[in-house]
Length: 228
Ligand code: SF4
Image (cartoon, rainbow, N blue to C red; front, side, top):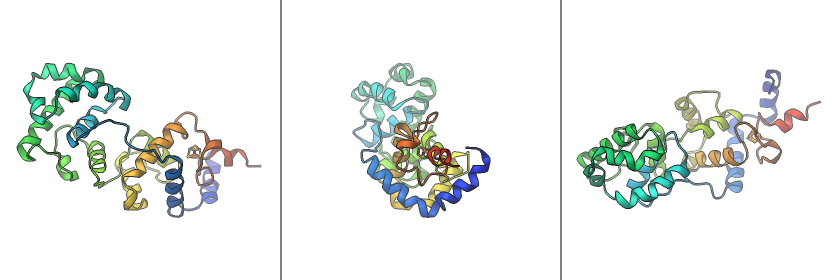
């Protein structure tokens, strides 16, 4: 959108504080099935899936973990095989050397410090080798205790397009969203933006004409195109 329209567009849709609840409500109706796409049956499988999902797709991770989780059931299992074997088993997710190293470090710490259980607090999750803020946020949220808001590439793009944050850095975007989104929605909110980003607000070709948010969105092409 040309710069001259930006101020007008913001005026047209109103302040973000007034828009956030209608945005959430409409997205909840539109994407009632929004949920994590990774497949897992335990806290440990969740943690491993999220760690493997860095730099690859959820579909790819699910393909790999189907066999992986039949073989590795406990933290001890990841430490019982030579590292080269674990690398081979996760090879298709990419960055397999770093990921194998992180998985083994994490399993050792789970056994040593957490009785073999996956912790639920961000401070503990962030101590695990190879677990950065996004991974910790996803795990805490899926375990029912969101303590932040996951910011991935879709959340970042949609937050900017919807005028919810002007920041580029994911940590700063998360801070903006935490101030704006009511805490009860911290877990579901990123899923809503991710699904909306995949289905409607696509990176290169946003389908504004089909978007339920187009009257609430300062970046809507519909509103910009309909200007005299
Ligand atoms: S109106 Fe367009 S730019 Fe705004 S959220 Fe919808 S698809 Fe994305």
